[in-house]
Each structure stands twice: as structure tokens, then as C-alpha cells.
Length: 103
Image (tube, rainbow, N blue to C red; front, side, top):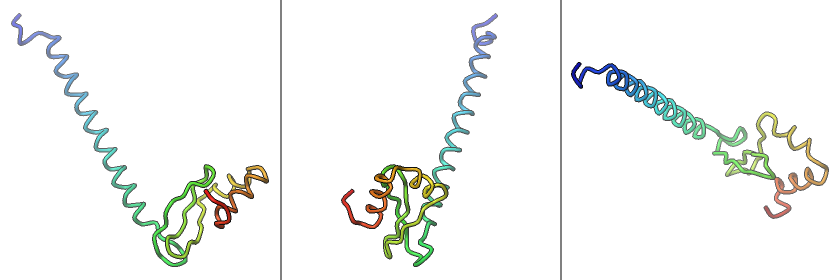
């Protein structure tokens, strides 16, 4: 049997091709997810004044704050997450939301 036609060489060649296909699919999925995330971020607007919202982390809770009217908006579950905190933690979070205490 010649060196070029050995079964193990064919197996490695097929296996390498499959690994390359999988890597391409994974990269394409990641690229598509990144593109969708950028589009979604660009679409988030303030429901009150239609300006952009920016995300802020306050004590481990991500809130959306309008860059213009400074309205604060909570996504599903964020208010519940705040309410499950201790009274002191809750008070601190609300004070930060209202701008009464430093970050």
C-alpha cells in the first residue's frame, strides 16, 4: 500500500475536514449572535421620551436608565430581585437609583 492511500491518512483528513466545518459553524453562530446583540442594543429606547437607554449595575442589579430624562426601567425579575434584598440593601439601592448616595 502506498503512503498516500493509507486508511489512517484518509481518516485524519476526513476528521480534520469535519473539525473545520464545526469550527466554521460555531464562528458563524457567534458572529450572528453578536450581530443580533448589537441590533438589540441599538433598538432599546426610552418608552417615555424615545432617547437611548444605558445599562447600569447597581448592587448587582442591572437597570436601564434614560440618557435624557433619567427615567429608570427594570426588566423582568429585576424588581423582584431588589425586593428580596434586606431592608438596608433595598434602601441603598433605591437611594442610588434616585441619586442620593455615591456609587
